[in-house]
Image 1 (cartoon, helix red, strand yellow):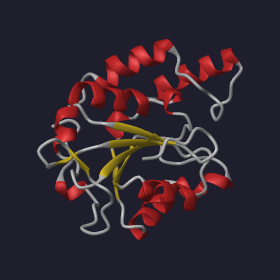
Image 2: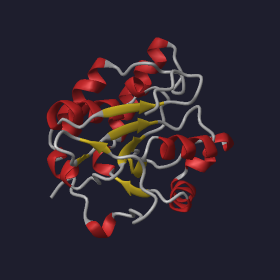
Image 3: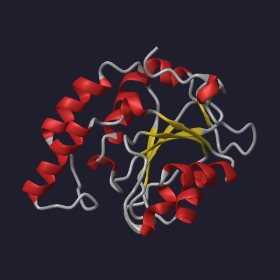
Image 4: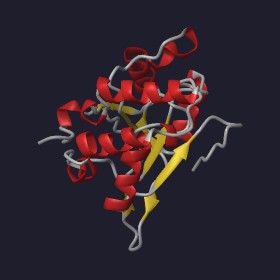
Length: 196
């Protein structure tokens, strides 16, 4: 099934869970955080995740690397090792990553607007429409939600600092609106940090 998290694909630790949100009636409920790479150092990134009670990180990047030495910690293998050492699970959800064509569409708009990829503050309307129609609409978010841990938060990861400049905000909004999952946006301290 598209978008299904199979148990064998999850790397979720059985210990070290964070704070749990509780729904009416006293049962635990799932929650989502969004986080980008830009603006964080490896240690503050991990501290932010653990401070928000994140137990599982869903990597929504197509290419799981970031250029430049200051963000080499966010390249897939290094990131996975750091998350495991911190007791956090990891899963790559490539099905929710934008295609190369969609990324190029956004880069053209960035160029037209005169903004760099690291300083973008909004997505192009055509990108939003196409990502929603081509990637998000056919994806089974219900199956994804059903398999998220309910004893810790799940973080959606991409590279952009600001969630509204990234496709993860579109996924998060669909989870909030369509599935009632509360969403928190995590940002580097001093840059509009919206922690738990």
